[in-house]
Amino acid sequence: MIRFENITKVFPDGTKALQGVTLTIPKKQLVVIIGPSGCGKTTLLKLINRIETPTSGEIYVEEKAISSVDPVELRKTIGYVIQRIGLFPHMTIEKNAALVPNLKGWPKEKTTTRIHELMNMVGLEPDQFLRKYPLELSGGQQQRIGVVRALAANPDIILMDEPFSALDPISREQLQNEIKHLQEKINKTIIFVTHDIDEALKIADMIVVMKDGMVEQVATPTQIIENPINDFVKNFIGIERINRKKSIGKRELQDFASFFDSEWESFYLEVDASMLVEEAIALLENEGARGLLVKHSNEVLGFVNQSILLRAMLAKEEVV
Image (cartoon, rainbow, N blue to C red; front, side):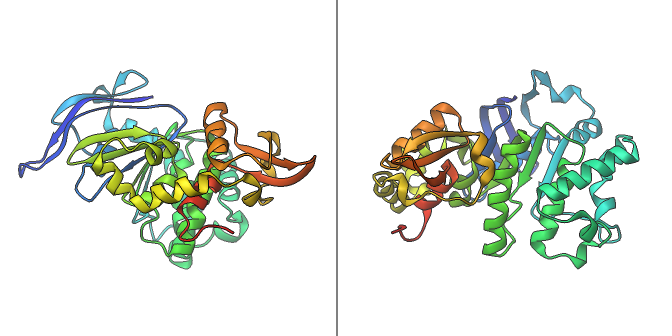
């Protein structure tokens, strides 16, 4: 658990980046911090690994004040993925990925096993990619390596600062899907900064909406759409998205069932195809299941999960 207690941050030029932020981020959730440019979201993220320090207030990780921890040692325990990726061009992918395990003194065999495991998890064949250099990879592949490097030393906390914003739309959507799927496997505490509301609604377990250095609302994606706390949040989400959600929410699950992920089979609840989307999302939130097995008269039509249903709500046109 990460707890921000009455955090303020004023930069030397007088800019008030954060104003009395008190916030709790639960363990093992993918929490997205979102808001317009200059709202303080990246500053809030950088406070966690002490790239920035608060002007006042304290941050606790598992009830331990991080101000009492050596910054270098703290950063070894926190994964960090940024938009620019930051891979070292003169080092192979394997050496880039092994940086933190090597700093922590891991045995070579343990590091190699871990990197191979993660490469497979992000869909990159180790034998094909580990001996290459960053400039030999596409932007999407490099960003995947950035994720591998952040996870290599098995940190409990991963910080992601607009990691997909520079990618083309296809690569970005693929990585959004992969980070959501990856989180279902690794169960880490991920804090993800973005300015893209569609991205936030698609991948988040919980969303923190910020404005002018303050937290406006903390809620699940569904709660944010259904009950925006004020006009700022409502306008930031967009009236069109809210209306589309209401329309899609009355559709039946049989319109959205899919077979693309067989791994759900151990984590589903069985439901009837006539269940409404809004009922299914509420069930997923309340029961904590990965997905729903959609059936009609004992015939399996496919699976759905919250990400699929939210994507349908965010689509430019309704699925017919």
